[in-house]
Structures are given as C-alpha cells and as structure tokens.
Length: 74
Image (cartoon, rainbow, N blue to C red):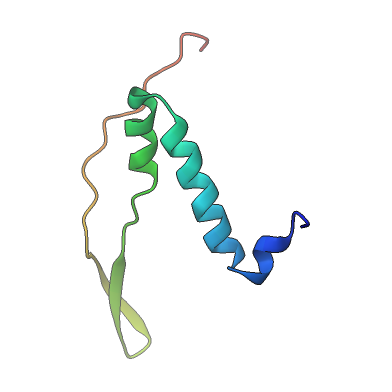
C-alpha cells in the first residue's frame, strides 16, 4: 500500500479536511477553541445590474473581532 492510496478514494480537499480535523482534535482544549474559530466560513453575495456590483450581503455575518494584541518585541 503506497502513501498515495487515498487518491483513489477521495479528493485532495477531502484529504486535507480529514488531516486538519485530526490535528484539531489532538490539541489541548484552550488551543482547540482558538483553532475552531479559524475553520468558520463567511459567505456573501452581491447583485449585479448593468455591469455594476451592488452592496455585498453577508449570509452569516462575522462577529466583531478584538484588535490584535501587540507583541512585546515591537
């Protein structure tokens, strides 16, 4: 059995999804919560009329994020 056997069973995207899920499950709880937020997907759509795009509407609006923490090494 070669290392590329997965190619005959599922796509590369499915393979990476399974691998990422396994890594997330192996993390400690506090790190797992932070990484779960990275896996969320935001979707939006936009109506176009006469070659011009209208307002973009988010289907699942993202929550406001706190500003990034500054590093002590700055």
